[in-house]
Amino acid sequence: MTTTQRQASDSAAPLGSAPSGPTSNRRAGGRPKLSEKKRDGIAGYLFLTPWLIGFFVLTLGPMLISLYLAFTKYNLFTDPEWIGLDNFVRMFNDPQYQQSVQITLIYVLVGTPIKLAAALGVAMLLNYRSKGSGFFRSAFYAPSLIGASVSVAIVWRAMFNADGPVDSGLSVLGVDLGGWVGNPALVMPMMILLAVWQFGAPMVIFLAGLKQIPGELYEAADVDGAGPWRKFKSVTLPMLSPVIFFNLLLEMIGAFQIFASAFIISSGTGGPAGSTNFYTVYLYQRAFGDLQMGYASAMAWLLLVVVGIVAFILFRTSKFWVHYGGDLK
Amino acid sequence: MTTLDTELAPVLPVDGKPVRSKTSWKKRKTWATVIWAVVLVAIVAVVLYPLLWMVLASFKPSADINGNVALFPENPTIQNYVKVLQGIGGIPVYTFFLNSLLLAVGSVIGVIISSSMAAYAFARVRFAGSKVFFGLMIATLLLPFHVLIIPQYIIFQRLGLVDTFVPLLVVKFLATEAFFVFLMVQFIRNLPMELDEAARIDGAGHPRVFFSITLPLIKPALVTSAIFAFIWSWNDFLGPLLYLNSTDKYPLPLALRLYNDQTSVSDYGATIAISVLALIPIALFFFIFQRFLVEGVATQGLKG
Image 1 (cartoon, rainbow over the protein chains, first blue to last red):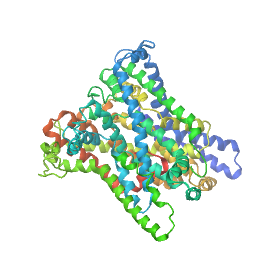
Image 2 (tube, helix red, strand yellow):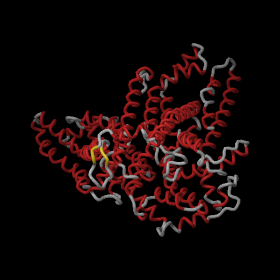
Image 3 (cartoon, helix red, strand yellow):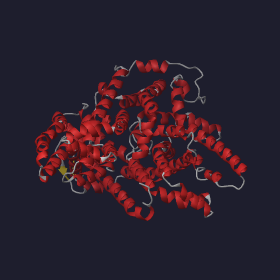
Image 4 (cartoon, chains in turn purple, brown):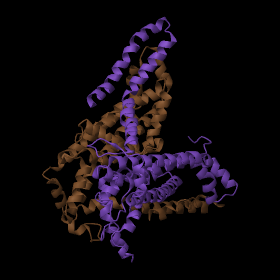
């Protein structure tokens, strides 16, 4: 399959030149319009061939397969057995599933706003003076490149271990929390800190947005006697709202999909006491640990529906708080 | 702690407020700059601390990593790295590096070829259905991968491709990462259309225009995509976890997991050391291409 697909993608370009040869010769004698349209159509689909195969074979097709499996019992080795809505009913009686929903929602709904607030705050700080801010911008961005890696998860775990640097440091300050990794109550703050640590990517986007706000708006606000808070509320936030919307959407959807760090920090168990049992970790365990492919597919589709609803709500409410005015993209 | 610091941010520009006398304004400005720099340095220190700690810890004896508060190693040793070089489970450590490199380079090639082709079609060719497909492509940007992992696994398992690199690479050759397509579409749309038109009047077909005009002009977008494709593949954990079973096919993230899960406390140092080694290529990319990376994120909203 692979080789044929690769051949298809490789041969797309040379094939595309075939129809263009004769037509270009005809051009001198006044080529009919229809042939150019046709030629464009052929070229378009040939250039799009790899993407089309990818979309239908690896995205849309699998989505439909997964939708079907959501209504079956399937262990990968025997044929799927149709069980109707049983998988969905089971979810409502599965305490582990409900816990995974709960911690994922807390992570998304608490972690994302904190991360974006940090990103916006630091972006405004950097925007205050452009000289010398380039170094800071790069330094803050670095964690975003590696934050989802296994290396960082290992380091995070080591840092928040009992007697690790964070625990020891807090003990010096008189706060004795013990290890965060083994404490179900402290695992969530630890995971959120890991997310907030990667504020650099949204910060860079905020900064680009801040630079596009025309200075005259602030000058006008000054003339009107607006204080800094008023300027932030009435100029910065509305002018930045498209960027805030963009960051909120992408960061929330990204947060739903946290996997590697939770998996590594818990050594794949979702522990302690299920406190790192994020949606994806639980789905992975059910699908590939217990081979409950049907149940896991149902979980996946429910998540898709929820993410779809969240995105829909964001888009729908955006007209009340997102301002597409002025020159802002 | 970071968040506490950053809450200062909206307050700081107070100092930029116009003040009557010019000298006092200047003074205030200097002070504001000093405070600005101090606050930022403090945030940088917090943000980079884990990385600094990690590098320094890799030179500590395992017993010192936990429990010894000192940031700098009191008895620096390269023992951890020696241990890493001995490999794990009879497999030398360079195997993991080679596997990671192979996957990353394969990803870069696949992403560049397939995404630039799709982007050219979306941005420069008029054909029936292009708007619908473009919308679908944008929609896949927001699609949680959860829905795909199980059926994709079933497909590749049926084809007997589990425990090969094929499932990890074929998705890259089929432009499934819409981010790259989108990035290139944006870039191509900003190129002057006249160049294309001139070439087409001279009788060049789409493939000619694509190879001789578009590709050379979107080099910055190609470089940015290549770097991100490399880093994402290098960091990818879930894909290899799903598809690779034999230890000798493991890329670094899976090898790190072996260290993390299997080794006893006494090999703690080795785990940290190989984590450092795994980040070195990304660090190099970062130092060489930071402009490209940060600009790429700034203009396209690409995530890290």
